Image (cartoon, rainbow, N blue to C red):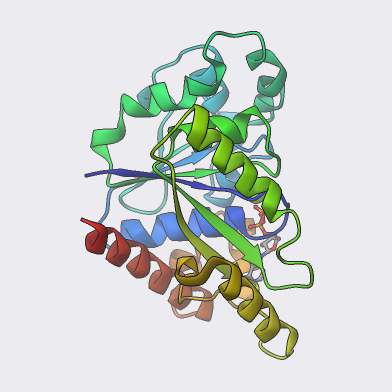
Length: 257
Ligand code: ADP
Ligand code: MG
């Protein structure tokens, strides 16, 4: 059984990339075979895992636009069991180049299906928009994981995302589910966080993960060393919580079967 999870929220800076990299690395460290797909032209996931963009010969752009086989765009990472399909700035052109193509929303789905059986989990790090790249991701995915930053107006803009999810469910991917809602960057020193948690739980109920990601400086340092938190600082709070999240994701999948 393999599962494709899109990590999406059109707001920037909510922890999509941090969650993609670290959840993927933690799932791999628990013995799962994991593929991480970077579909954000900024390529933060790619550099966050130590991939030098200058050395990339095929990136997700080539998979989407030039019909390169996804296995020819995959690279090993410094985490055992974790592979990546990188993104480079070339991908910025894809939004426009995809517009006139046939079945443009299905490109990623078709490609990932060629390699799906080789992995337990495929995670897709989405860009901060609801454009064609995010639509491709939601169409390819079995489920969507939504990171929400613990701050004022946390729920603002979410109706747009949920609307997009509903449209994709209606027209492109009837089996798309909400995997879970992840609260990120909780500042334990303020009461604000508690209020936001309550508000988000009221809205999403049991879809909210029990694991809540606190602010942790080690999590923000790790990408500049090209590492996931479990290799950069395995004893940090950040490593502990992302490992907990990975266990929760596995547990829900086992429960659903
Ligand atoms: P997105 O991909 O949604 O734009 P990022 O994952 O890149 O968000 O996070 C935005 C910024 O916040 C990055 O600089 C990242 O290192 C930092 N960050 C993310 N999560 C945490 C956290 N739990 N603690 C501290 N810094 C974090
Ligand atoms: Mg990002």
